[in-house]
Each structure stands twice: as structure tokens, then as C-alpha cells.
Length: 440
Ligand SMILES: Cc1cc2nc3c(=O)[nH]c(=O)nc-3n(C[C@H](O)[C@H](O)[C@H](O)COP(=O)(O)OP(=O)(O)OC[C@H]3O[C@@H](n4cnc5c(N)ncnc54)[C@H](O)[C@@H]3O)c2cc1C
Image (cartoon, rainbow, N blue to C red):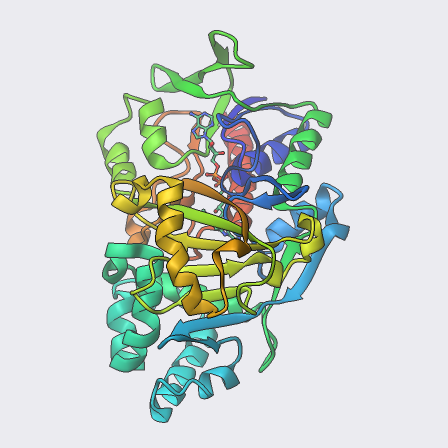
């Protein structure tokens, strides 16, 4: 069977590996000049660094298996994550249940209540009972107004901006439930990272696809998915800078965000199009500082203070050995704004100027000349907004057009998006294509 795949991120590459591994022909078209999509890398200090911070949880077994499968298993390391919360002008340890008990900004009774409910969420397998309630409502009601104001509201605002009070409790349940797998009782969390970088993993996936008889093109944007009489016949793309050409396939798998997919298939039936158009995404805007010394002692710092113009500080080299980046220290300052927001549009230098004065709040010794260089990245379609009763609005992988399949991050639920789930989904959809073909 011949399958065209749109997108060379985790989902598209996993689908192509699955198909070529079973003796079929798969051809991947990636618009960007590199593979890896949201988990792609660029060069810093001689090493490869993700455009957006990336790590794995112990529960991310599909991604870990993929890394093994392409021969990079030796590069995986599981490291203690140092988690903190910036609140009330200082950084609090926030990695273990004991840290929560010591978190004095909340009255003791509230800390115990928060800890008990968190424990119960970790033990609750049935996510459906959280479907029809927002995380804001649920945490307020069960964990208390103080815990909501100090911890959950800043966390939800950080991830979902103005949509913070529309997010389903199922989303928050997923975050809490799955993270337990990365932590043994009363112990600190361990997070995984392929020391060769996520970018290398996806490059090697591309090589493996070619070895298995497939094709992978970068800088190859698909312009249109061709449909005749309700059946997909292939796609039109410009490959290797050449003229746009139409290529025939038995099936096409698209892994682009929904808003791009609807542009590639103009005549989609209204019902399915409506479901796709109801999906809303936030972008990620990242300023990456390369410093000559550490900023904080934490890997992951949630910023629970709305006065600061960023919501997360991920100091990559507080978990990953900085010798990979020529001995430099790497800090991501993150936000998840709307594409229409002022923050999204700001020029990199302007954003840096806005952020720098606040770095002294994280470390009073901070001086501007610690910054050796900085980078700025925008990642569109980074975070789908998961509202209440989301399961009713998930588009099917099988589209209304025969032989056309969609596999994107809006279809990952109840878990939150992540490389692991894109890999799992890519493989599942590839198997779906083969099953449909065998049924005729
Ligand atoms: C800031 C940030 C931090 C993250 N942290 C983590 C983490 O710690 N751990 C983790 O596991 N996950 C993390 N994720 C999520 C993870 O990166 C994504 O969920 C995953 O990479 C999505 O893979 P995908 O293949 O489904 O989509 P994408 O990576 O979005 O791939 C889709 C691809 O389609 C391409 N494309 C679009 N239009 C066209 C076209 N017309 N023609 C050809 N190609 C096209 C795009 O260029 C893109 O490469 C993070 C994401 C972000 C943004």
C-alpha cells in the first residue's frame, strides 16, 4: 500500500515507521526545514536543544519504546526533577508531599486538604466523572478557595491564559494522575531525557523510514489533499524546491493542526468541518536564555505570581548536563498566549527587555551580563484548549472522505498532548489504515 503522510513530527514519523516496518510504502512531507515538529531542536553551544523544553514521564512508554526501536535507548537517562513554585516573592520547593506540608502560605489545614485531594485524584482511574466540571470549579469546591487562588488559578492561567476558567477537570486529573507514575511513594519525581536530544531521535526515525523503503522530505509543504468522488486520491506538494506536483496514494494521513487541515481539504462535509473548527489552540512563546551561570536551583519553576510576565521558568541545565551545550546554562521563559495577543506578536528583543527586570525577583544577584545570548521561538498549535465534555467534540481519525485520516493533538484525550501520545496515535492510525484497506 502507498500512504502519503503530512507532517514530520512525532505522529507522522511514528505512522511512517509503522507502515514501512510492515512492508508498505510511506512518504512523509514536512513543511519545516527540519523534522520533529513541536519537539524539534536547534543548535546551542555545539549541542542540540529543543525549541520548547521537553522531557518524558515514566508513563511515556510509547515514546521510550520508539527511542529503543531506533537504537537510541542507551541515550535515555532518568533524572531527579527539581520542582519549585514562585509565590510571595520567593521560590518554594514543590516536589514532594513533604514540600507541600511545609508550604506555609497556605494554612496547615488547607495544606492537608490539598494533599488529601491530590492523593485521591492520583488514585482515581475514572476520568469521566470530571468531564462536566471545570478545573476551576472543582478545585475551589474540593481543595478550597485559598488553594485555588495560590496554586491552581495561577497554574491554569499559565497554561491556558484567558481560557483558564473553561478548562475541564479531566485535563487537570490527567496531569496529576499521570505524574504519579514518575514518582515512587514519598519520593521525588524522575524525568526522562534522551541525551542525544529529541531532534536526533526524530532525525534517526527519518533515516529508519528510508532504510525500510519509505521517503522523507523536509521543506516540503503540502498545498492540497486531492479528493475525487468522496475518496482521497493523493496530495499536491512542492518537493525539494521543485514545482507543485500531484502525487497519488492509496491513503493519506494528515498530522497537522485542525485549522491547517481544513485549509488543505476545502470541501469537507459541514459536520466534520464544524467539529474541527470548534478546536481552539494556544501558541507557545519561548525566550531561551543562555547564561554563564545558573539562575535558580530548580529545573521546573511554576510562577504563581501574575506580576511576572512569564508563567514558567524551565532551567534545562538544572536537570541535563550543561557540558552538552559547551558548559552554558539554559533557561526557558515560557508563556502560552493566543496568536492574536500582544505578547505573541512582540519582537524578540522587546520581549527580552520586558522579562529581564523580573529575573532579579527569581535571583536577587542576577545581572544582565550573565546573558551570553538568547533565542526566541513561537510554536503554533501548541496547546489545544480542553473544555468540559470534550469527549463529545473529538474528531474521528477516519474523516468523511474515504482513505483520508487525521491524527493531531486535539484527538489526544483524556491525557494532555505530548510526544508519547502522538507516537501512540500515529501508530494506531497507521494500523487503522491497514485494517480498512484489508476490509476493502
Ligand atoms: C513548549 C512545549 C513544550 C512541550 N513539552 C513537552 C514535553 O516535555 N514532553 C512531551 O512529550 N511533549 C511536550 N510537548 C508536546 C509535544 O512536543 C507535542 O505534543 C508533539 O511533538 C506533537 O507531535 P505531532 O506530530 O502530533 O504534531 P507536530 O509536532 O505539530 O507535527 C505536525 C507537523 O506538521 C507540519 N505541517 C503543518 N502543515 C504542513 C503542511 N501543509 N505540509 C507539510 N507539513 C506540515 C508541521 O511543520 C509539524 O512539523 C511540548 C510542546 C510544546 C509546544
